[in-house]
Length: 341
Image (tube, rainbow, N blue to C red; front, top):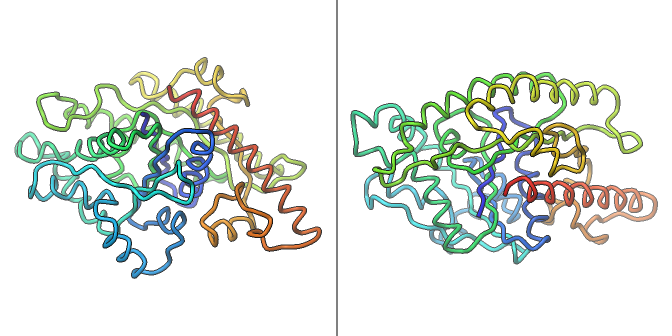
């Protein structure tokens, strides 16, 4: 079982959509997969289950106890039980893909986790809080025999995300081709080594829920949300893709390599068909297919002709786009399997 987090503290880079589509493809390829909604906004839950109102969420929590992170780690955070509760995730319409639901109250434990990260030496009783998230995910994975756990993280550098990423085995950085994403890569080159240093105090096997002895490894970034022309990004988007690629190789990788938080370039090249350093995939804008995907809680590449709800030339064009996305996500999933060993 491997835990893979999708993280970028810049919002709007399609982390949620990518988690859903990649998770579904891994499941199609025969890997029992869990997608985790770790964002208090609960967008992944809404996408996967087709929910749109508070009543929808209330109903799912009522009918599916222990289906979300908040409920299962709260006993550690508030001290009521002192140990995590393995989750019983919800099986999606893809029988090989399950969902660990989001919960808006997850944001409420951010402060407690932050306090535990900074004052646990003075208050030993709270030392188990930071590592409880990883323990919970691993116990859930072992209970249900998942092959992969994909974590959709919120766009922040808060304590919750620190613990989620640092308990993972691997992480991926989704990007969009713009100035702000290039700046975000530079920022991550400073944030991630700091997180690794802070979590070092919690890799102690003498505590109930220690972090893994080895930090998570970066396996690449995804370039997405660009407009294509002849199956290639238009020039203005390609410029930013190249800039981000350069920031990854010249800034992010040198900051992660000394602390063992990245796979090597040779390892990446051996497992990626594109042969572009650390660029896992190029995925164009979903355009109108995303609306149909959200409507039917189905990945863009798995939409049926009827679900596309078009006719004639428009249907033909959208079918071609759908098939291109199937190819891209199949390649992405195969690459992730090859790299996350």
